[in-house]
Length: 207
Image 1 (cartoon, rainbow, N blue to C red):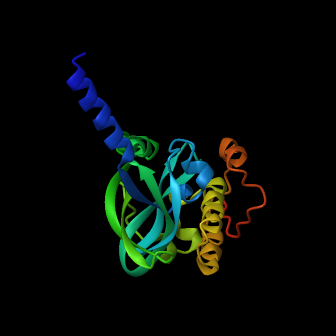
Image 2: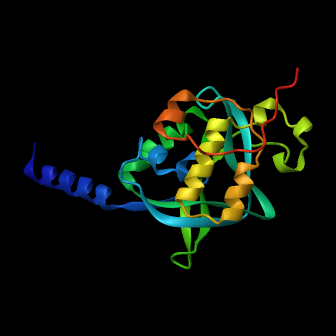
């Protein structure tokens, strides 16, 4: 290899490793053990508050045995999550984890308030491509379709991640009362150490 070309490649590689980006995790990626499974460079900056969006659920997945979280534009609502700083080298890993290549999630940029820094931070976040048509939280438990319900494992990962991220208790309590289908994903129950996390709103499957 030409020496000059080698130097350029090395410098490019170093620059790529040094580049950083911010990520707003509002679902299972609020939890460090979950995010670090595929994104080892992630460092938590602190909790973040996204205004004029709501947390919602859609798209049943076999990985979690329930619906996944998404954020939906909704004036007057807000979503708490974790702000992470990652090396640019992890962006592809994060995209793969979120199923971007499969058309499950799509990356967007959102402006998130970070209380510890007292500033707005431009963050990468992910929305489901198949967004829900209705607001889950405006439906009675009898009206919620089964494919809109998160599993207990998934919801517990959100609760544990929110506690770990030092998100206000009112929001943590709200997460604990979101309706779920009671399904468990044993792999994640074990890997994420979700024993002891309580939930309060099981919705029985309609016969």
